[in-house]
Each structure stands twice: as structure tokens, then as C-alpha cells.
Length: 135
Image 1 (cartoon, rainbow, N blue to C red):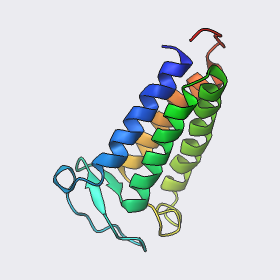
Image 2 (image 1 turned 120 degrees about the horizontal axis):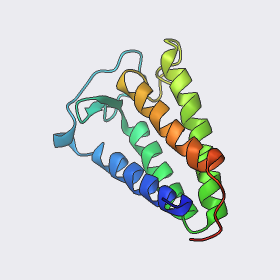
Image 3 (image 1 turned 90 degrees about the horizontal axis):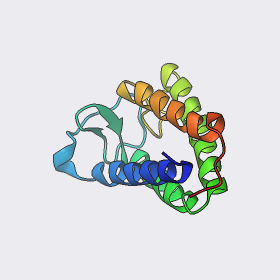
């Protein structure tokens, strides 16, 4: 898979995840502990804690991915950015004092392994994969 395809796929998946988080039938209502922003508090697909801010972040990462996919350099920067940011989110999710990003966005439970997996895939494309100048 090319780096630009990676950015496109991640962008589309993030967009779909963000939009799906706003569809009540896909996600049961869930009361997240220690969360100050409770609007749209749900368990996406019954597994992943989300709220309205979490969904908006997913949409932002989706738009960024689609925009980044227009060039190899943009897609590589996107991969690096996703790797670093989602790596940090993984660590924050493991710490009880920060697993709701200070009461704003729930990042605990199943989000931890998902964020770690996303960070690893993005790190491969952003840092480890040999640079290809072809589309």
C-alpha cells in the first residue's frame, strides 16, 4: 500500500467513525465516569467510549488524512502526526487521572488498544516505510 493510500484509508475510516458516533442506533448511551462534556456520551459499536468532542476529533483526523493524501510528503507527515498523537493518547488512556483527557474526551477501555494499533500502523507509514516518490 502506498503512503497516499494509507492516508486516504485512514481519512475515510476516521470520517466514518466520527459520523457514526453521532448516529444513536449504532451506539448505546453510556455514562462515562469523570467526564465533564457528556453530550453524545456513548459506546461506539458497544465497545469504544465516545462523546461529541471525540467524534469531532475523529472527523478532524479524517479531513486531515484526506487532505494529506494529495501528496507523498503530506501523507508521510500525517502518518508521523497520527503516530505521535495516538501514541500519546494511548499513554494518557492508561493513566486514571488523564483517561478522560481532563474531563473532555473519554480515552479509556477499548480505546487504549485501538489507539495503540492506530499509532503503530501510522508509525510504519510515517517513519519506517521506505520513501516512494510514486503515487
